[in-house]
Amino acid sequence: MKLYCDPPRLEWRETGPVAPDFDDIYFSAEGGLDETRAVFLAGCGLPDRWQRQDNFVVGELGFGTGLNFLAAWQLWNETRPQNGWLHFISIEKFPLRVDDLRKALSAFPELAALSGQLIAQWPQPLKGAHRLRFDADRLTLTLFQDDIADALPQIEANVDAWFLDGFAPAHNGAMWSETVWPELARLSAPGARVATFTVAGAVRRGLSAAGFTVEKKPGFGKKRERLEAVFDGPSLKPTPSPYQRLLPASGTAVIRGGGIAGASLAHALRRRGREVVILDPNGLAGGASGAPSGLLTPRLENADRPHVRTTLAAFEYARRLYADLGVLEPEGALRLIENMKDRARYTAIAAAMGEGYEIRDEGLWMARAGRFDPAAIVRVLAGDTRVITDTARMLEASLVLDCRGSDAAFHELAQSAGRVFLMDGRPPRHPIVWGGYTSAAPDGRVLVGATHEKGAEAGDPELAARRLLAALERRAPEIAQTLDGTAQHWSGVRAATPDRLPVSGEIPGWEFGSHWLRWALDGELPETDVKASGPQNIVLSGLGSRGFAHAPLLAEALASDLCGEPSPLERAGREALHPARFAIRQLKRGQL
Ligand code: SAM
Image 1 (cartoon, rainbow, N blue to C red):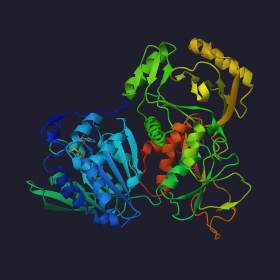
Image 2: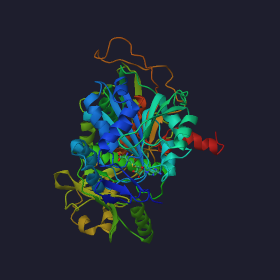
Image 3: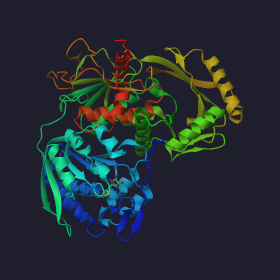
Image 4: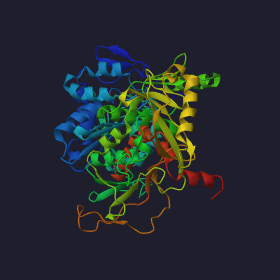
């Protein structure tokens, strides 16, 4: 099944793009920006309403060219409160191709500086949720690329303002269907406002029935009327939400584990101005995240399943983050095809994933893959976060987050030891992957990896080197023959779950035995007791050999939960990665 969304069918008129399938325009080139300001921004009481709270959430139905988003961003830059953060969530079934986006937005030169930033981060048209961050302007965009009927139930957020901007209801019933209104009510914060250009009866009735008070207003330009509505129904959110555990605004979060999971979470929390320390007896990148070289590749699966969407989105998020930080060599990688079965499988995967995945004679070319220095990424993400290696010290924390690898306190985790080798020889032109892999490595050497051994023992290095070299000789003899057997080797222990997917979230019913941990720190934290008022059982682990691809987005999701922000993940995706999934599966099988 396809994992990507189709692009829209567009016709270009002088006034801008038109969707012939819906017999409607994206925006009117004449006064389109003014119309957006009048209908959506002023219609939702902006900018006044976002002065009053630290996190303000806009939800939009129909992202299209992003004109509404850019207009909101521009207004935000002019008026945002000092500590404010704007979260813009939008749904789009037919994401524009980047060239069409550029062409459409060229009609608005006054937005050029902002549209350039949007275009630079424009996600692949993969189905599912994609988070884009614009930290300098204290703004995030979370795009849900899917049909509205499938996307809305996947969203978790407290929306303060809704922009309803599907094509005209007469030509696009799906965007205005009866199933939409209860979802808007579910997602609305008390007092949430709705704005739209249509006054269609079905829209007014649907909103009213869902708890909104609806009012017609004079329309923009030649249009007679438009609509505003206010949510004054009861809050429909479960309290507390099954996921959101708020981190007190003051106080220090202790992250146990100085690998890619811990560093990603430190980075995500510090971006939000939170105070963090990392606790790890081996310091930063002292464990499995300290390999001499790493390969960032997507997890390959061709079914449109929640965990596949999430891991692909995580790969894209990590890729963008590392590229921004200048710590990725984006050189692609080749996954070898070794038999007919591989060929069929990778052909299907390339077709399902779309752009950036291509079958060549000898394998699946993954243009979006890249090479990196693992310890450098961990250090860049951790920045100047304080790292404490003396774990005998006790320290008082508002929250403890368990980002250790195979030592994390979660009973489903198993250990898998791995060894990699750095050899002298001629490196391949680009990384080559099969069960193992080879790539160029620092200092002109060749990386060959990796072994997988059950448990914490990586085994005899000579035997492992012989096995890996024999495997390489069968697949890439021209490289294997240049390698002189002498090698530096490195080993680490991965944390693996039974289904080989990460665990991220709160462990159900798991206790530390006391309400808070008493760790002592050498005086730099406030003298007063900071009680561990948050939960103690949040884990980000089980990353296997894909920590660098999956940790940044999962950390962003945990940080969003802890800070009361909209989630960057689809609900079904986070359920697929939630620690409770193993107990739930056992319950379903009648084993608990
Ligand atoms: N807000 C947009 C802007 O600023 O450019 C204009 C949105 S345009 C009027 C309507 C959008 O709704 C189109 O981009 C269209 O692809 C999208 N759309 C149409 N049907 C949809 C559906 N069933 N689910 C999700 N999006 C849909």
